[in-house]
Figure 1 (cartoon, rainbow, N blue to C red):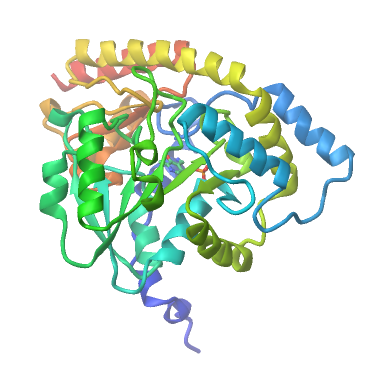
Figure 2 (cartoon, rainbow, N blue to C red; figure 1 turned 90 degrees about the horizontal axis):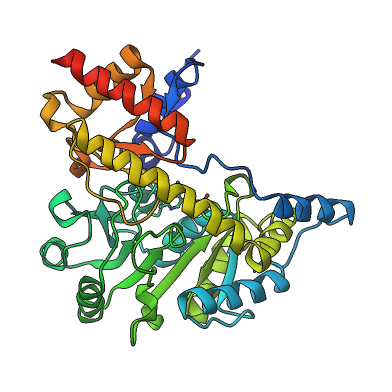
Amino acid sequence: MNEDTSRFVARHVQGLPCSGIREFFSIVSKMPDAISLGIGEPDFHTPWRIREAAIFALERGKTSYTDNLGLIQLRRAISDYVEEHFGLGYHPENEILVTTGVSEGLDAALRAFINPGDKALYHEPCYVAYHPCIQLSHGLGVPVATSAEDQFSLNPETLAKAWQPGCKALLLNFPTNPTGGVLEADSMASVARFAEEKDLLIISDEIYAELSYGQKHRSIAALPGMKERVLFLHGVSKAFAMTGFRIGFACGPAPLIEAMTSVHQYGMLCAPIVSQEAALEALRHGQEAVESMRQQYLRRRDYIVRRFNEIGLPCHLPKGTFYAFPDIRSTGLSEEQFCHRLLKEQKVAVVPGTAFGPSGKGFVRASFATGYDLLIEAVSRIEQFLQNLG
Ligand code: PMP
């Protein structure tokens, strides 16, 4: 009997890389005394009043499907929130789709807009899902490298050089996972002009927007003339510490939202109702909790970045997210060697920069969504590790 069932797996799925992060964290999970700076999610519990809203929803018997687009009350709250925080007006009836996390929003967008063979530009290092999701939608990913010299922002000239005929979309993620890079106003204006010139659809994942530490976050969709070519993706996972609720939302021109809704209604039907009720509470009354968590991330960021630089790992100041991205080239180790040895010798987990694409070479990602005291201990173990290297 032929035992090899892998022949049933589609070719484009066989070709997907196994997430570098997943592999590494199966090792970490077996080490109870390790300090993990690897996880891409808040260490805070979801604020109590949001959890209570979920419990109350269950108590009221809210256990059904909802409209494919999501609860209308939630879409109204999203509309108000996006208007207040991003200066963008979207109509709750036909310009907003509630998704099962930004993950589903991204997947539905790519499946709705990418024809087989269409090309999608994305800046890199980037969130691990971007390239595989482009592949899953039968598109071709075109990476645009970013660098520490540019604070991991998107250099408009590098973007123009990376462009090729057949590029239809540009994926943006500012502030960026894994680098904490942001797109300053002048670069944003150039990127917008370039998108207009090349008629690109921008898919803008702004999931870390509230976790910005310098200037207030601005969306590229808010630039004059851009709203018609930008799909704005956002969600409650990061700023509201609600990763397990799985709620995101897509806002954009009605025809784009309609196309995404076709994909969403057959693939997902709707986002879970209890989570939608919780997200409603978050957007209406969660701002104070968000600000309190942001302040704590800010304090941790300032600490960890200062210490990395002190111990000899140059690290730019991330202007958003909860990730630091130090340069480990001075150790002479590859990022893989660095991470494996650091874990084995000092029981601290950080993620190799190359898990986020080839331009992460020479860097590691350290999440500061970790308690302040643990950060102090982790950095002192990293210092010891560097001293042992000599
Ligand atoms: N986009 C980025 C840039 C992320 O870092 C993540 C989570 N790590 C996601 C999307 C997925 O978010 P969600 O929980 O909303 O699916």
